[in-house]
Image 1: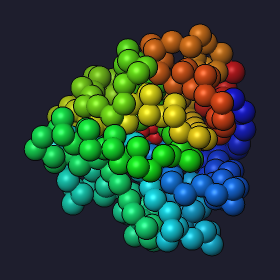
Image 2: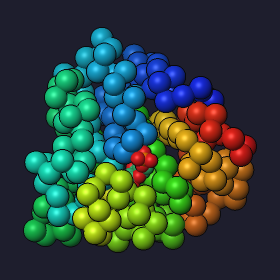
Image 3: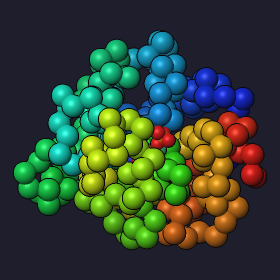
Image 4: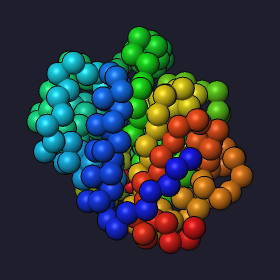
Length: 233
Ligand code: GLP
């Protein structure tokens, strides 16, 4: 696991863009993408770059159950706004949060990933160490699945909604097994709220109590952290 410490999110976004450019030069065709406040500056850098995604595929980590792409809080809406509207891809996949049959949707999404193995995966990290929406205690072997969000994640994500009651209680998320199979991972962490989780991930034991710690077993992970997130290391 390589650690790059940067001054702020802007520098982190630039470092992320450099890694993405290298991966694309080396033939990466499918990108695993993430939402949340963490990758926003990275997407901004990507949008302002000369990179061309017209032959690329993207597969997103997760989506809230119950929200469709027209809902401003959905991850589809987020991706359109921050990246896809500006940089068209060949195809963009996200789980369908409005699927009537969630079991079928989960299986279909696993098939999407099987058809498009992920070359380069971007990740944020939750304050409790979750990646995607794989909460503490999630099985390591799990692929795409429906998740009951923990009270701490609902609370942390409430800042994007009118109030906490509006935050969906479930999400569809790629599983830990899916994430571990991606060829290269870049995890970004910014702000002091992430310091404890980052310390646990980098210095603690590999434990499902902190899902991000599993990444220590992955052969190619780069962590980009700002000084505040890295302050406990
Ligand atoms: C959400 C997302 C994760 C994200 C994390 C951190 O729950 N499902 O993919 O990494 O929370 O969010 P933020 O980047 O806003 O801190």
